[in-house]
Structure formats: structure tokens, C-alpha cells
Amino acid sequence: MNGLPKLNFPPIRLRARRRDGAVEVWDSLRGIYLVLTPEEWVRQHLIACLVARCGAQPTRIVQEYAVSLNGQPQRADVVVVDDSARPLLLAECKAPHVKIDGRTLAQAVRYNSVLGARYVVLTNGLCHYCCELRDGEYIRLDSFPRLCGV
Image (cartoon, rainbow, N blue to C red; front, side):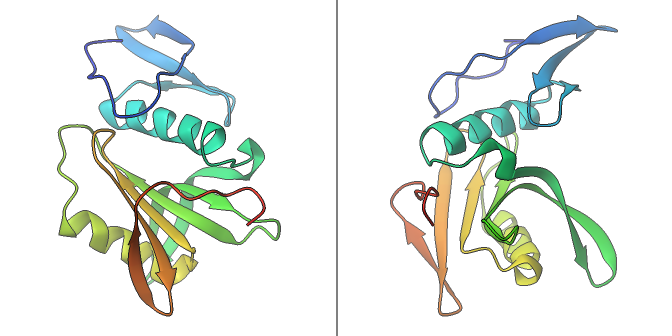
């Protein structure tokens, strides 16, 4: 689709349209069309994976979750909340050409210092890093966490 790379996620079906020269995809969670940027390509695949593979309920997935850092408004790309609407998983999505590095982790850790999610996921669609926050330390996981029943 639109010359975007094949990602390291199971394939998904997206509803797309062309508008004003740009490709837009339907975001079923927000009920709107969004411009299909490389980062949005990754985000849509991650959300599908969180639902299909991790058991996240779509109604508990929030995109562009507001985070206030030192009085400055920021936005986490994807947050999955638990039964009590507390953040359970925080995910930062980057475009496929953006390397996941210490800066990406630092960004997610800053956001999570406010949110307190149990899991942190970093992805550019090609490489995924999943961590669990245990006793104040981020422990790398071998796979995406199961979210149903957590």
C-alpha cells in the first residue's frame, strides 16, 4: 500500500481511500480517516496485533493518549487501559526507517513515569521491544504480553 514496507506483523486489511492526493486509512477505533503516514502504517499494524495476538479489547485502546510532562502536553502513541481505566500498556510507534534506540526508550520511560503502565512496547514495525516494569526496573520480554485477564 502506497510503497510502504512489509512489516514484521501479521498482515492486516485496511480500508483506504485517496483524498486530495493523499492515501487515508479508516481508523475503526476513532471512527475517522487518517492520512497514511509511515508511522500510522506501523500504529495500525500494532493495534491489530494487540487485539488479535495479545487479547486487548478494542474499547480499551487509546491512541494519542494525553501525558503531561513538567506541565507540557505530550501524547503517547498507544495506551491500553485495564478494567479500571488505568494504563496497562504504553506503546511508542516510529516509522519503519526510524531506528529504535535509547532515545526511543527514554521517551517511553518519561511518559511511563507519569502513566505507570506495567508494559512498554517500542516498535518501528520491523523491530519490536517489549518490557515489563517490575520493582522499578524494565525487564525485556521475549514476546508481546498477553493482556486478557490481566
